[in-house]
Image (cartoon, rainbow, N blue to C red):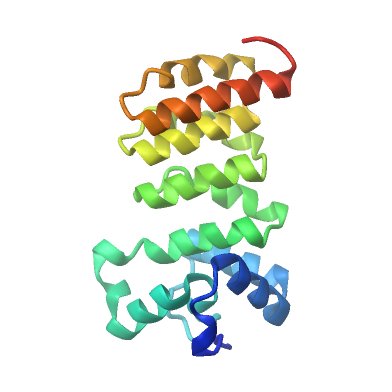
Length: 189
């Protein structure tokens, strides 16, 4: 559909996504990102925008080299799509983000957990709770932050468990999430 000119590919993701929304429309960008996240469209579909709108130079390099055909790189379009939903959001994207919490790629799960917190997706609570035991520390940290943002009193327990996580970043995220949960619910937990 339309590519940013090569000099624009080094911009931050927010700038690229905002330009895509200006050029293609927010609804179209959100729908495309949801389709990518759910793997209902191919990342190199000529009927869809170029991945460079959401993946910048990294996307351009992978597209040129055929890297998205390699299984170890195939998750990147889903990561970029989820990240783009941080900057281009419509509520109808919520169910896809919740489903992405079960993605096989830890990077997609992490980004979806961040989105659940940012966009306050209460429907993500059960999966966020399960992800507090994920094998990837970054997913555990994002999930406890998500519980702090959208959880209820009963979600203090898994956050408390994460206070003892061997990964310092997870324990710190848990301390902050517990403080946020208490502040949001206006009570000690």
